[in-house]
Length: 347
Image 1 (cartoon, rainbow, N blue to C red):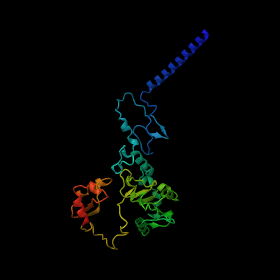
Image 2: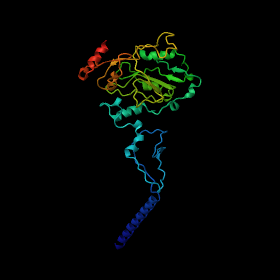
Image 3: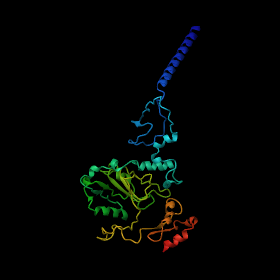
């Protein structure tokens, strides 16, 4: 019995000595490399772009590389706070509160980010990265996909297609095309609209030359639906250029996307008659420089912009006529300018 106790004591003592030995080895390695980090803190997996370099560390094949060893003789550096360290992970400097265009109570910031990330997966697209100029070496040719049987195309989108088909840039050969235009009507992406086209995602992805939208141009006037009006198009634009009205600055890709005005279906297909525009008429001799007539939203999205239009209205060459009569409860929100604005608008 005594022999067993002595055997147990010897075993426990040997184990403790072995642990002390291992602890001493770790201390020695730490003293030899005092400034080397072996493991980085784990942050949320935000989307990273392959061409983006970070100041503190980089990611290669999903393996975090340690920081280079710092010389002990170098003076200590004040590192930024943790919130600054996370800034590269937040796309566009986005914080929990999003841009004013999308700030509302019906959709959470996480849901709005998910919508944007799902639709605009290629936010970093530029002409030099998401456009194949090799297709344009033989000239600038635009190809329009043929419409499928049963397609309903709005009058406005048909005007866009007709103007391209009647131009000298149009081609019926996709092999010669530099730019591709969809036959699917994507102008109105409000799910409550009668002109909303279903199954756009499947139809676009089934195109033989879609190639994730490369060298494609998509037109859009309305996106989202009441009451949020996010920029949910219902499909991914991929690497396609987006010609859009009322584009959000958060999603707009400079030198790649195109900002177009919001025009009605009554907008003429073409301008004046042949020879109407002369080369010597610059600037054009017009009475009015700028004219706008529309509803002035008293509350909600767009109200801040339209409520400020009166500042540039001079009644001479800049005419901005707005009315407060919008919605059933507009009188509850009317301000001191509503009566005068409604009167001038009715003239």
